[in-house]
Length: 179
Ligand code: SF4
Image (cartoon, rainbow, N blue to C red; front, side):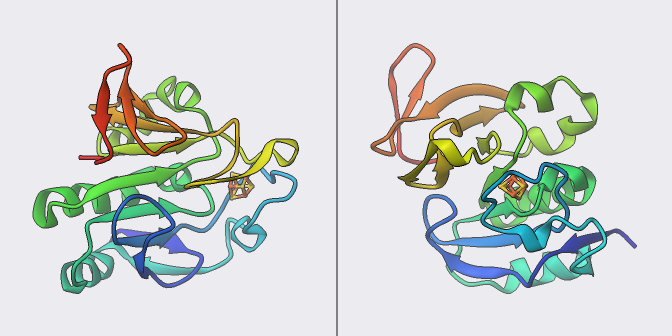
């Protein structure tokens, strides 16, 4: 049975962790220890509790009016396979879009093939560590170094600006929707 280690139960109806009404998966475990981390209780790799991936799929499928799932934490990429399986299910069966937070940069993640299963399922990646000296009240992110990247097939196709609009690499607007 495939399991995932969670910091807490699912959050439903979140509007803070990506566009639209979202279900948030709080993964347990992070090695970065960013000073000022908003969620230090998620660091311990053995903290939190284990949940079966099948149970989370069941809960996803019974959630009402959700437009997407967001993987946060903790570091979702420490549990690539379980998060990828959930993301695949959410996209294919529920037509949800997928946001994912990570303390690594996209380039760091992309350098390792082991991250591809999850990167391929992510529509929007909020990347980079939280840097206390760059903290700012920003939509969907905590410090100015973090980027909100639109991905397709594990490649960057756009980035969100301060007004919440995605722009393609050529500068053309892609609108606000993640997928
Ligand atoms: S990557 Fe996120 S969860 Fe991990 S220490 Fe930094 S802010 Fe905290």
